[in-house]
Structure formats: structure tokens, C-alpha cells
Length: 232
Image 1 (tube, rainbow, N blue to C red):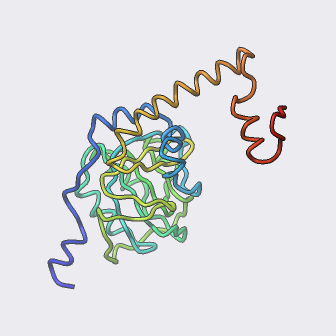
Image 2: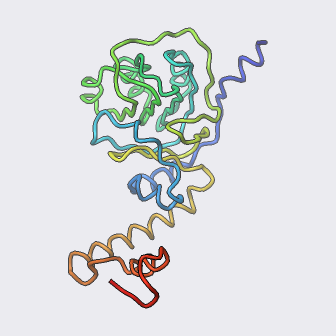
Image 3: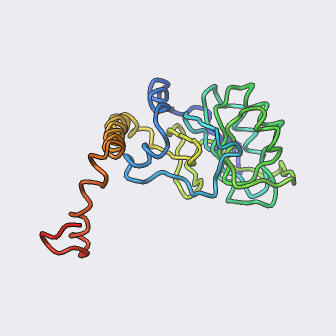
């Protein structure tokens, strides 16, 4: 591989979702944003937070590595900006950890918002104490190698979801959701509407005025469970 090709493996300048949109999106639960995105964008449930209280929102720095090697994560950390979320396609490997307490301390010092690993992490207790949002596929005490080239800020797959550099990434106790950068403004408006609709639904349940969803009978008829004109 020539020098130009090697340099192209690390894209230093990317277009990120704006800080204003990040701040607006941070108000919403991952489930709300997944719903208004068409029930798409939610990563596989194998990717979970080390601390269930974790919550984050920010633009993606994407990393692709070979299983068990974290060289390119270090490269991503070297170019990350405050507020970024490092998202790593680690091929779901659990044979060793790609990140631990030392790297997380570095991420905190840089201002990285969170890390999402489709791979294992380690030093779980220390990372919890640091209050850093680390999402991973379990833990493993084995350390990684730092030998194999990969890519930074190219499209990746993480938890079964395509992630492009600069996309919006949101995480909480339910998991991680990715929203395509150019779709964020429209989805935020829909998210606000959905929150209000859900509040009204819960108020109806608590008051006893609407103890079942208004759409239930029609959906049961459409599914062939109820006859036309029949109700529960």
C-alpha cells in the first residue's frame, strides 16, 4: 500500500451533526428516537452499558479494527474532538478487551462523550467509578494487540447498524441508537410530538379514562382476530 492510500485510511476532517442539534437530541430517550426513525437504528442488544445509569449523545467518530487489535482506536482518540462518540466495529469479538481504564482516562481528558464497542472492554469497576459511558459486548481481562491497520472515519457496521462519520449516536440504559446526520432535524420534531403523545396516553391510563389503546380494535380486525363491527 502506498503512502497516499495509507493516509486515506484515517479521515481527519468530517462533517458532524451540529452541537445545537446534539443538545436538542440529548433531551430524548433512545427509544423515542428509534421509534420516530421507523424503529431503525437501534444496535443489537449485545451492546450494553457497563453502568446502567450511563447516558450520552454526540457525533460519531467511526473505527474499524481487526478482532483483538486496538491500534486504530488510539488513532481515533488522537483526532477526536470534545463531544465526540467513538464507535468501534470490533467484529463482536470477546476474546480480549479493546479498551480499559487507561484509554478511558485519556478519553475523559480529551472530552470524548462515550465509547461504543462491538467488542469487549475491561476494568469495568474503574470505568464505572469514572462515570464514563462505556458500551461493549461484555468484558474480558485479556489485553489487545496494537499491530494491525484498520480505518478511522469510514462507514462501519456496529451492532448490526450502519454508522457513518458524524452521525448522531445516542445511548442510555436501553442501548444505543444511531440517527443519520442529515435526518436529525426532521426526527427531532417528530420526537417532540411523540413525547407529548406518550404523556397523554399515560395520563389517560392513570386517570382511568383510556385504559386501552384507541387503535386496538381496528388492528385486531385488520389482523383477522375480530369480525367487522366486533369489539372487545
